[in-house]
Image (cartoon, rainbow, N blue to C red; front, side, top):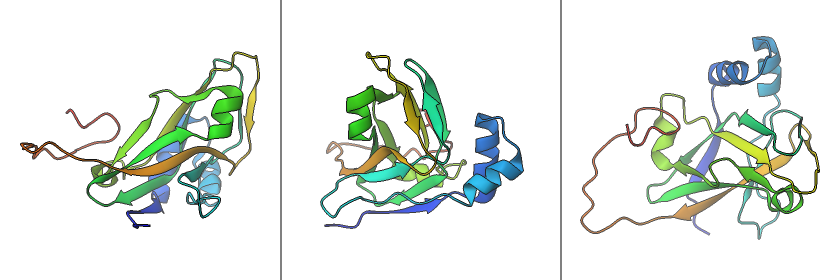
Length: 169
């Protein structure tokens, strides 16, 4: 297997700012959560996906949405990206879906002004009325590294300056 990336935590300051902006917690509570964060890892040697763990416990009733600042960033080799998906079992049981269908983490996101902090926004789209419960540090999403190509006459020289949704700015 080719090694193409390295997961890291964002800085404490970045996480505390983003977590407090997302949830009604104090900076001290956010720092306690930060100190428990774990980097994504594969469950088995044959797994393609790296399990992304939730920094907090939460429940989602049908049609509810949550935006989660994960506390992680990833340095990726050129020519690769990280695709983020719901964990397969959660998608199957609860129709747990990413709001943007698939998260695309580009290699240059790592250098963004938000430190490349990966946020995941998910919705429980259950048709069976099932409420999803995730415990703190339980896997809720997975990241898979994928190669990509460009066209022969590509001449893009633009540089990212920002976080999510900033590649066209």
